[in-house]
Image 1 (cartoon, helix red, strand yellow):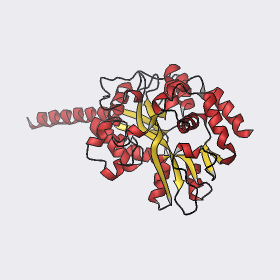
Image 2: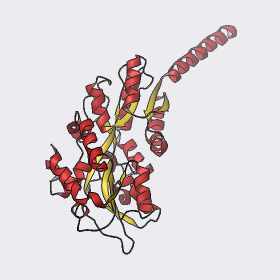
Image 3: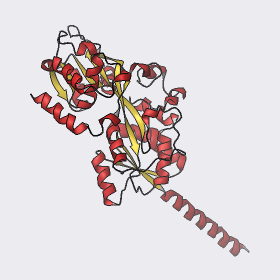
Image 4: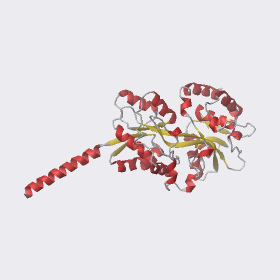
Length: 342
């Protein structure tokens, strides 16, 4: 009897162990941009998903759409969820590189319809704002209108890309945020022409833009809000405004043929949850796209006042439209580069 009980118990333990091992073997792989952003996403998105789903969440880094394209074309993608820029999410869908999202699993309550499509959904937002030095004697341009007014003297800087830069030029020229698209390209270039001699730097990375303010090379510039907020926290004499800021986002996709598609949908559901969205904002100044994040109590009121998607700020911003740029970006980038060089 005891021998039988030992065997039965052993079988039960072994069966339980096999079940646990099979469960633990389930995994999903997230590929992001790396750096401080992915460190924050690990705590806000990935660790809660691993705990709630009871699976292993693996990580990798990638450098954009080309990497996704290469994996899908190989027929053996290794990533299940990938974070891309807004433009690239739409290109990936158009090229058939991504799976349709399962919106019976991924909830969109609290998410503006401009933040998701058939095969993608925004994971967090960011904004391009006007920032300036507050040191005595620095030139003052605290509106886009002043920024693009050549009579307001002072060295300034802009993003070395037509997208975002053409938009803020039109906002400066009196175009209402709701009327930005379709972009009046000719008008935008005329606005840029006004102040071209006073643009001392066309920055191409967030690090570069922050350094321009830190080193006092410019008096005011277009910059990502998170970068200038970091400078403020560090005690630098700078400030910025969300008035007519341009709101853009990163988004997540599931590559075509992803090995763990079902788990990928569950991971994205965790990413979009109000709790994870709110947690990310407390770790890095990337605002939530799920408005219910502001109802969780996780985001302090002082922090919420500085986020462009917060109820107090969202009506001040303009929404970037990546769909308008599809099929136009390469041509306008070439024209923009020639404009800068000549």
